[in-house]
Length: 115
Length: 113
Image (cartoon, rainbow over all chains, first blue to last red; front, side, top):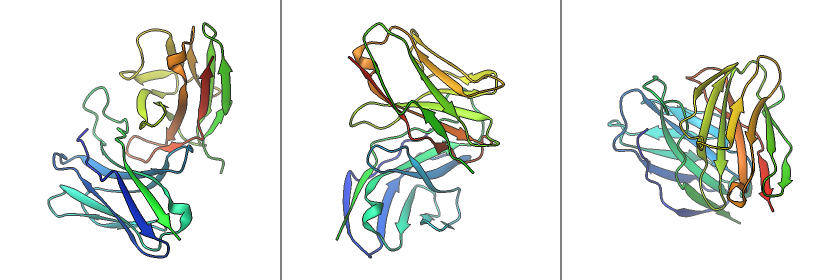
């Protein structure tokens, strides 16, 4: 899987939009961008994923640049419960040998929502 | 619709004992992944299974670790002769198909004394 680069940490005021960037400059054509978050020591929680079009669901929006080399996860109105580590992951949906389908977690971005 | 279930949530073993971790996937999901998370680190892939088959075990340590996903019942991650370095949180995730998202369980926290 392609590697991703994320800032180590970010702060966001409660009620404001949180914009979390991710660089994935070596992404290939059959690789999707996934976002997960991990609150404290819980299991990771799926947020959203996309290929090349912008995506939106009840949790967040995902903006992918036209060249697909970077993306931004947007939490429109951050709450204290959104404090977590956010992981941007690139994953193939086409089998190409061992490791094809696993999620490769980096260190993520630690988002702190401040009252 | 119950989510992914793991048990036990906490497991304490002495060095040399065996640890058995169970994972029941979401209803309708036939793909199971196991990940390990050491303190202050991200999750690391261990193994990917479908019913009765190990598809990818490229992340499994070569010795003492094994996994299965029988036709009936939960997936089992088994660690024989545990050592202190095995202390970690072990998460399983289930998936409906390979193009779908993975849903994670709450994890099992293994402590080896």
